[in-house]
Amino acid sequence: MSAQTGAFAYGDLSNREDLWDDIKDLDPLETWMSTHCGTIPVYNVIHSWPIDGITAETTQTGTVELDDTTYAATNPTILLNVTQIIEKGVAVSMSNMNTKHAGFKDKWAREKLKAMKLFKDQLELSIVAGAMTTGTGTAARKMQGIAGFASTLATEAAVSGTSLTSAIFNGILGDAYSAGQDHDTVLVGRKLKETISLFTAGNTKNVPASEATIYDRIDVYDSDHGRQEIIKHRKVDYITGTTAGTHTLVTCIRDFISIGVMDEVHYEDRDRSGYYKKGAIVGEYTVQVANEKAVSRMTHLL
Image (cartoon, rainbow, N blue to C red; front, side):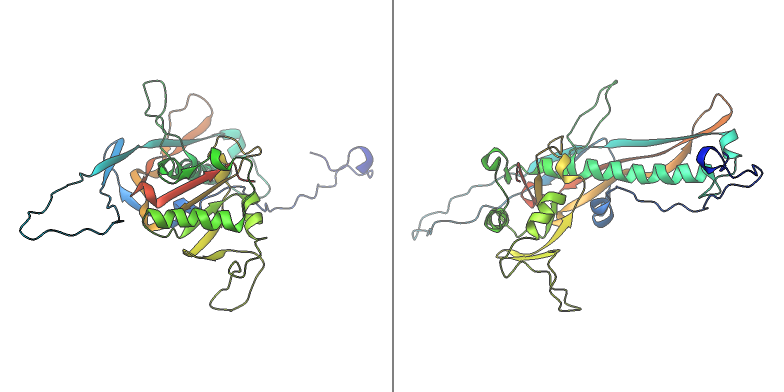
């Protein structure tokens, strides 16, 4: 490429071009859940785990003298998920590898790095917003994301077209409390994060203990149902399959969510048939939600 063409020609075409030897990456990726949740080993493509719920007492009862007690057992039930093979290919021609590049020295290493980032971004999308596909000989297995486990605490059409308010937000957290425990983590996309930051109630300011300084942006929400960490997350609005005009809010108990690892992410060489180098970043994962009441989901909020 010549730096002296057209309007930029200055006569001496032997002048070298000026090309800055650095790249400043801006990655629109998301890895919060896959980074902050614990991991567990998985030994089969169908991964299951038991849950055994307890129902709170709502009426006062007693036992008559000399009467035998009653016996009522509630058996555990099973939740399950499937593992998902995630693969990001890398292929670079030998000519390209032997060419000098601006911004990096090794084209192959650069492409492997990008593939690794895309792998973790795909894992994050599946963990949060995945829809289960059990798989066939011609269809890949896909894991159920955490939002898909919110069966008891899932409200969608009831709030269609409704703007998020502090009262609605507090009510969502209250429903989680009524189901058994306070949720400590909230995942929201950009739109709802901005909305939460506009809440005017006195308990909606982020107060870092180390600085005791109040900020307008809310990263920690002190609700009537404990303290929640508010996470701005790029993948949450993909739970409905599209981000156009639909916004989703997910709350959870973080310690109840685990990343299941069947095959740790790694690099593999792949056979090639030409003058190039070929490989893949690959791994097999799933996600476990220890109890379906540990996750809530509300969509169609504005």
